[in-house]
Image (tube, rainbow, N blue to C red):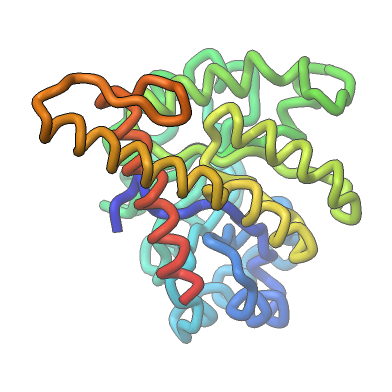
Length: 284
C-alpha cells in the first residue's frame, strides 16, 4: 500500500505487559497500535513485558493494523534490551521516546537493524531539531508527545492548543518535507467525545495523518475525523473528471463549483480517493 495513502486515523496505545489488552487490540477498528513498553509498564514488569509482547506479536491476529513497539529510552536501564528484543519482534516499526537528535536515531538503528524507526517528538530540543530528525533515512514516522511537551513548555491547557501550535507546526513541516507519517498527540479526557472531535478536526485541518489514542472509546471519533468525507470524495471525483475533460479539449483550466481546478488540485483529489480506497480495504 502506498505510504501516503495508508490510513493512520487511529493509533491506539496498548500496554505491552497486559495480555488481555493485547488480545482486545485484535478486535478494535484501529489503523495502528503502539505496543508500549515505556510509560504503560511498571518498573517491576519491564523485563517480563518484552517476552509477553514478543509472544503476542508472534501469535498474530492483528490483521492489517500497523504494529509499532515503543521502547524505553536508550538512556534508561531498559532501553537497549528493549531495542534488541524489538528487533526480533514481528512488528512494523520501533518507536523511540523523547528524540532530540538524529544521533539518537542512529543509536537505535545500530540495535534494530533495518527495522523502520518512529520518533516521539515531545521536548523543546526535539521541536528545534525536527527537520534533522525527520531526514534520517530510517525514520518513517513522528508521534507527537503533547503531554510531555506541555510539561516541558510549562504551558497552560487551552482548547485551541495555541501554546502548542508552534511545536506542532515545526514537526508537521519537517514530516511533510521528508514524506513521513505524523500523528497528533493524545486527548486525555477519554470520555469527552465532543472535545476529542474538536482536537481531531484541528489536527486534520493542520495536516496530521491521525491521532494517538489512550482508550478504545476514542477510536470512532478519530476514524471519522481523519477519513475523507463523502462531500470531499464527491468533489474529488468531479474535479478529476472536469480536468480530464478540459485536457481532452486542449484547454488548460477546468471549473468546478465556480472554482478553478488545476493540476495541483487533481493531485490532491487523487490522494483523497486513494485514502478512501485504502480505508475501505481495511474495513472490508
